[in-house]
Image (cartoon, rainbow, N blue to C red; front, side, top):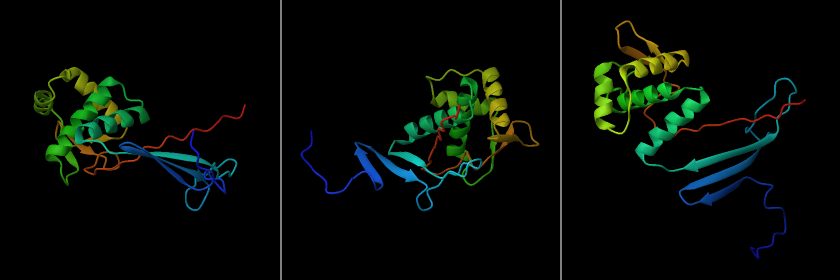
Length: 169
């Protein structure tokens, strides 16, 4: 147990807790511009917990695809198709809003990701999921898709937030 004693409550202000390669920031919602409003009740208070974590490029793509998959309830095929999409974006879609997602693209992806199993049928099912989630949209040319820049980008930072609200029963 720590011997440090405080004159005032140390938990009242925003906190940053360093934990190895990541840091957790805890702050109150409803203070300054840190607000989530319940439009039915007008309530603007709560707690915001943000985790900051540095990862390598491969971990970044893996965590990105898993989090997008969770947010949009993607099945395994959708998550794998998203991994192929990210593969293409990183290699050939720099500053472009269209990608080619065909059998040749899948072949290139599988060559570099030997431990991943993904058939063309499953890949197509995954592309349908990505379309339904508004992550991609079919272009006129078969196999070409427009990417939604709000989800797929060439940046190196992204924040995922999950808001939990207790149901009043």
